[in-house]
Length: 217
Image (tube, rainbow, N blue to C red; front, side, top):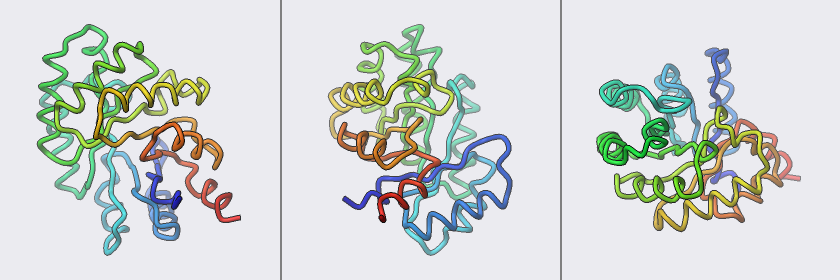
């Protein structure tokens, strides 16, 4: 298992500075991570720092609950791609999900998935098992490449990884053929291995270097 290739090395937060992004990209190159995930304002710099590598520039769009209007979400995604994003990690419109506005949810995702390879964050900690199953089906129908659990703002962040693993199994069953990404509260090598065993194809974590140092021992 080349665990580094599972990892989207993540640097998200309001207090992130230019030097933090440069450091994160340097770490990604040192350990050959799958990708680097950043906020939209850092896409250009991340692309520059990762040039001549196969490390993907991943951008987080519309956290924490994906409730911006459709036009703004499309604009955010197009700008990110113009600035160099290889993949979009887009939060599904969770309020629309909770109100069962399935046609609007699907239209929104279809529009976004046409722009670039899209991983859809379903916010599984906000959802019932039935909602997780339903939105996983919609994510596949929309043309995404991946269904993802959560952001760090999700209520699931503070729950046990066993529950996250159970959500992964629901996602895989209902979005067959798509990649599955787990994120939030994955901080150790043991955590990462547990999520991979549960079915994760990609791990989003800010603890990537810590995980790799443990893995290298």
